[in-house]
Image (cartoon, rainbow, N blue to C red; front, side, top):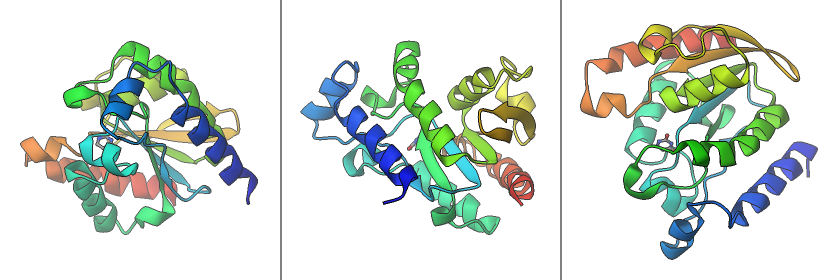
Length: 199
Ligand code: URA
């Protein structure tokens, strides 16, 4: 087994046993799974969403419900294979009723995401939605941290990771297109920009 796979399995095992999480009881009472991440462990592009929804918690796979269908459509539109990227979330367990992740939850799960980034070492980190954008821009000390997603979406922000240079590309969350169809073209344009930076 590759070293990366072993390290990612270690993360999975730690999250499965994360009884101190405020979402742990909700997970076990509902027979849910934590959602660790999925995709190529050597991916050039890493997508970071918010937190699993119901479909994701039932299957343990990220972005496999309605938002996932939008993500798949966007990937296909710009000629990216889902298997060739890595997809994860900041918060690894489903928050009740799809509420926003809380600060304490983000803080608890963030070290796992940091480790995933350093294991996979993507050249491009594409954040999906404002929670992951805020987290990643702050984590990499980007001067744009704190700015609104409406100002930053589709831009490539240069940053330095522990392992080298990385582009951070903030994207709207795919779910926005589910309640605002006009956002679809914006998301498509941003995915096209993302692809150019990953080439
Ligand atoms: N929304 C997210 O942010 N992540 C998922 O995995 C699914 C929906």
